[in-house]
Image 1 (spheres, helix red, strand yellow):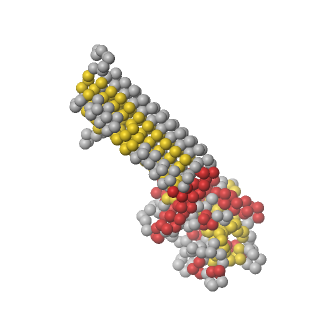
Image 2 (cartoon, helix red, strand yellow):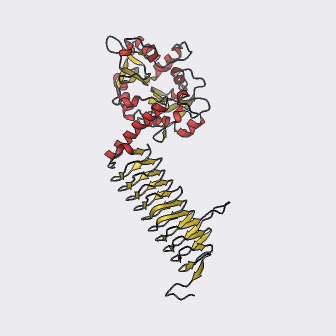
Image 3 (cartoon, rainbow, N blue to C red):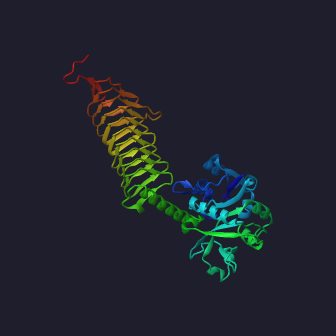
Length: 451
């Protein structure tokens, strides 16, 4: 039998989000809100974790995968009713955490503190609370004369004295499972027909059960997302946490507030992230790099000692010692080998460039396999598209591509060959050869005897 499991309530429609996307799937720092909550539960050792979803929840299940269980709430009849739907999946746990799928900032460390307090004091129910001046729709914690939590009064129902209470209910609980499942069916419905989990606190208190509270160390953990305004606030808080985390790990950010990081990003020691830079998706950046200013790195792997200056790198890989920019674009499916230099106003798409290759300015390299130590002159274009199909260009090691060369794919330039300025290459060029003109033709190299 598991000691602690969790229910994540994610069946809300999120009407105030004004979106076709389920509320739980709106993103905070690149991650669906509900996935951040599930991660916190897993990191706190809560297993199994069951997510309560609305009908037709395929998108939520796709986002979370099969590592959690699911329970469907067919009708939106309140948090208590939603919780009851998870009973069958959690029959073998001793204690049940209740988490909210629209509160993405809760920390695993906080859940661990709740777990410790709940177990140490033998509580029937433990509530995570927060103290702040504005209720923001949260219920108040009402205490009895002995200081024990006796009830949760919803914001809409609070009277004058209760509105002075600054200790608020976050909606995150830990319940003794046996008591919870025995009691939930008897929770009375509200006039609207909904059943609320908050009523469980008063019922536990009235039965003489022990109710404990833990005040969150960080009030931001209690940010609930019900609108796009709330979403932006949660995103801002999470990004601040991420920046602090990586700076403490040895990453420099001269102007942290202008750096945007996603939750799954990894940054290496002694890397510098300069202002107005976005690192998103599953990006991995090595040590000793310099990223920015004004750069975007998305779903890419950047090796050690690389630079990306005022440029975009997406869905691609840069091996160590590479440099891109300023004002260049590395599009998905590209790999830049060790020490590759891509300079001003260059675009690389779905291509492989070998170590030491340089394209310093004004070029398009698309659907190409470029060898090592190749020089690509200004204005070079791989003409990869004939209006219907795309074709690849191959350039061998040590080749020299002259300025304004057009490589009409499919075409191969052999190792150590070169093209003259303005050449239009339609036919393959053998190794150790020279081609010039429109269309390009082979000519002897000075000092070489033609075979």
